[in-house]
Length: 417
Image 1 (tube, rainbow, N blue to C red):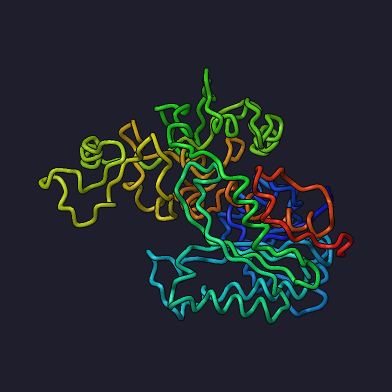
Image 2 (cartoon, rainbow, N blue to C red):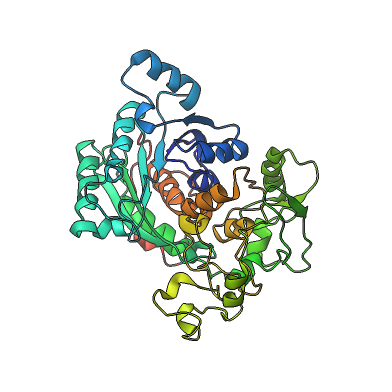
């Protein structure tokens, strides 16, 4: 299989998308992120990746000298194979203002601007599903038109549910991938469909994700001795520092954990927001999987059922959101009478225990809720690896499930570069 495929990340956040792309076999060379608090955690967990901290408009600007310096120190090359990122979604989100004039709706244009400089073979963008529906697909059509104008006419749009790919959470996200058909003649639609059909997994429940973590919690910034587990689930084997799973080895997770500077194996970020006595009394009445509308009328007026919600440990979690930093009442632990911790939220987003966060608890919850789950991000990144392997006539990055090969009747000529 071809080695040395390189990638550059934009709108990088705390690095979930980057981790998924790396897990799919790409080498991430550089990242761009504006939020200084997210940058703290990105640098901690990805110290070898060049990070540009600032507005994306200032990354690779028109100035030749500045551009040359950034290409050399941040990207490491004048071109990359893959440019990827998740532009801000607040302008599209169903829980946001959905303002067609929101300037964040146009942030995808920076991907096209950077594509002119970096000349990536592939572009991969992520966003919320409402982006496809807002104003009858206005922004979907604008993005596709912009990709075509830039020559990226071999494209695919797919909405993926994270729970189908090993993430213990029902979380739908849109991925748009594109390449220039004169360079990549393998239809990206076929690559995505074959990848998704081949890599679908059994659902992972909340309990299978977090029931090895202790009931006891600590204050923000403190740690707890790493818990033992006699019979970890297969998902927990991927997450736990002392286990080797199908995707992560013990050594890989521990190597990232060492970035924390902790010489002893502890459980980090197992803390959560304080809970008032009134709220504690209320959540004690919530049964697993139930919302506020299950409570007695004298306790809750049913004005907003989702205001209170306890996880059902037997099924994947409902979607985690950035608003957890303000109010965790929609994310109550399935068994314990408390909110989920930052570490439990990381698990439900498929971040293994080697990821350690350093910013305030408020910022940690916001960043985790905003993140792209690594195990979800791995899927579109693998689809592009598959297209590349098919284009070059090389070994496939995974073995397609029996009966799925017909999706790839098309074989491109080798030596496409």
